[in-house]
Image 1: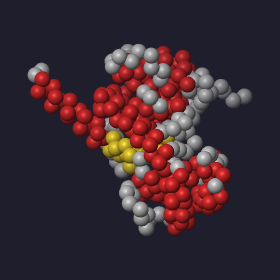
Image 2: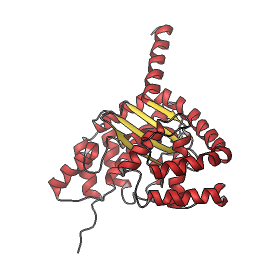
Image 3: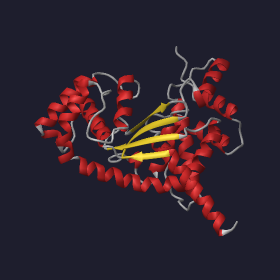
Image 4: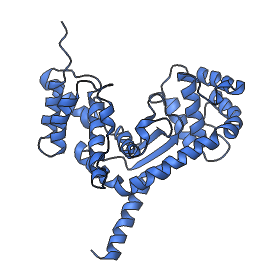
Amino acid sequence: MSSMRKWIVLLAVLASAQSRWQLQSNVWVNLHQRLMYEARFGPVKPLADNEQWKSAIEKYGAFLGKRHPFYDKELLDMNEALSATKGTKLPDSIPRAAAAVLESAMPLYRAQQWPKDDRINRFWISVAEPMLASAGEELVAAHEKAYGRAFPKRILVDVTSYGWEFGAYTVPVGTDGAHTVIQSQDNPGGEGFHALESLLHEPSHAIVGDRSGAIGDDIVRVTKETGIRPYSNLWHAILFYTSSELTRRALERRGIHDYQPLMLGMYDRGFRGFRQSLETHWQAYLDGKESREAAIKQIVIETAPPAKK
C-alpha cells in the first residue's frame, strides 16, 4: 500500500471514529447529574457546607423523589434536552420545578465548582479520543461479530463529575443511537485505558438486554429449552466479559501487555461464581472454538441458581 493510500485509510478511520462518538463536557448536564447524585446519595465536598447548595439539593431531591434516571421518561427526556443546551437559557421542555433549581444553582456552580469539573472532564476526553481514533472502529467490528448485532452508529457521551450510582449509564436513542453519561473523576472504571473499555461497554447496553436483544434473546431461548432461570445479572456479566476481553486484545495489539480488564474486579462483587464458566465457554466462543448458542447454554447450566427446597 502506498504512503498516500495509507494516509487516506487512516483519515477515514479517524473520521469514522469521531463521527460515531461525540464526547462533550456540558455544564447543564454536569449540574443536573451532580444535583441528582447528591440528592440521592448524600452531599460531597466542596459545596456540601454551602447553605445555598444545601437548599438546592433539598429541592432537587423533592423533584427527583424515588425515580431512577435510567428508566423514568421525564428524567430521560430532561437529560437529552440538557445535553443539547449550549447557551445560558434552559429549554422550555425542562420541568419547571427542576429548571428553577438549576437556574438558581448555576451561578454558584459556575463560580465555585464548574472550572474544576470542566478541566477534569476535558482532560478525560483528551485521553479517550485518541484511543477511540486508534481502536474504536476495530472494537466496534469485534463487538458486532460477538453479538451478531449492529453497534450504535451515533454515541453521545456526556462526561460528568458524577454518573449516578456506579459512575456511568447508557440509554438507547432511536433505532441506532445511544446516550452515555460517564464519570470522569473518582471512577476507577473510567481511568486510563479503562476509559476505552468503558466507551465500548456502555454503548453495548443499547443492543444487549436481559430478556431481549443480544444475549437476552439467547438466554430466553435456553431458559425455554432447559427450564433453568439464570441469575438476573448473568447477561450483564457476559456483556462485561465481552468488552473486557475484546479491549484487552485491542490493547495487546498496540503493545499494552499488562492491561487489567474491568471484569477482573467484578468477580468478587456482583459476578461471584461466574468466572470459570465464562472463561471456559464465552472465551471459547470469542476465540471461534464454540458457537454462541452452545456457549450460552453451557454458561446458563453451569451457573444456575441452586434449586429451591
